[in-house]
Image 1 (cartoon, rainbow, N blue to C red):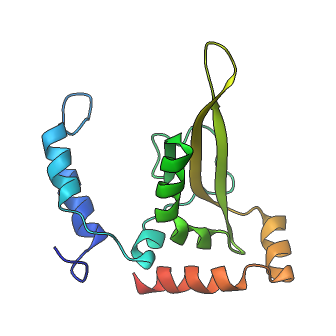
Image 2: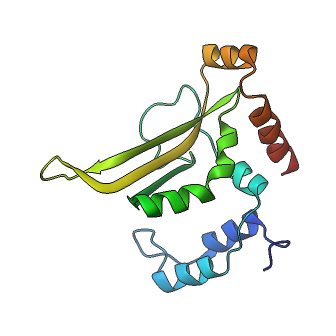
Image 3: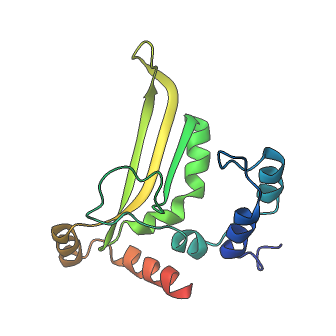
Length: 154
């Protein structure tokens, strides 16, 4: 594939066809081959691949279609990977909010902060008052436009 032929849906279907272990894991060789064959998605493809968390949702999102990213590592690694996720900033819009948390990781045994960080990122619907306030203040007009364009193109 080259960048002009990349299709997130095709890559997803290829992943779904990979054999898995009884626990649902794709074998490393198969995962490596799949990853190696991927091209970088366009900003619009990345944005439209996100499934946001509904406003009234509660409980664990792990087994749901809600899209979430968790990245852990030192500050250099977190910064490099975060740069790849910049297109997702458009989810900070009038109707949705970017669920973003960056924190230093605490050592489980000592309780002291380490040199590692964790970045958590997802998108969530704004609650009723949040939608109204954001729309009235017009603070997210550019992101609203970009998000609508990305979702309309798909």
